[in-house]
Image (cartoon, rainbow, N blue to C red):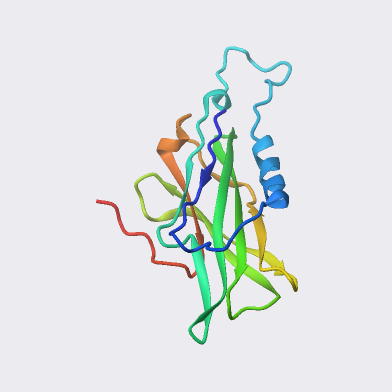
Length: 193
């Protein structure tokens, strides 16, 4: 099974002054990646029947245009901002359904007008048929992030519940796309022409 990892590339300056690793967040997402292994057919399973999981290509994960980061202002200065980072996904076929899980990693950063606090980051994960704007399934999540005194940033992670859509083909990357966004950060997607 192929697994692609996509990093959201943010506009220049969105994460200025940002450094350091995301060890705990990466560990959480690493568990999602490890879950993507293909297991051998169960004993007694018909060997003549093809296992769709063997050649399954997961749908790609995209960040909705303009929604990779959200800045919260106070009196003309940045209080804090959230940004998306690494995105991973896994998929498998079960009972004629394509079953997806999505992992999202991001950062919360304090701005000049901000101070130590706890934050709730609103993230939406949607699954669409490729080429269509209307989502088949939309899930909203609220990641928790806390920046203690003496620090200016922290990481957050979300691992979605299982999301099921009808299985069409082993080339699921041509059938569906997964779209992630920070709620309230940018325009809705435009229809493709």
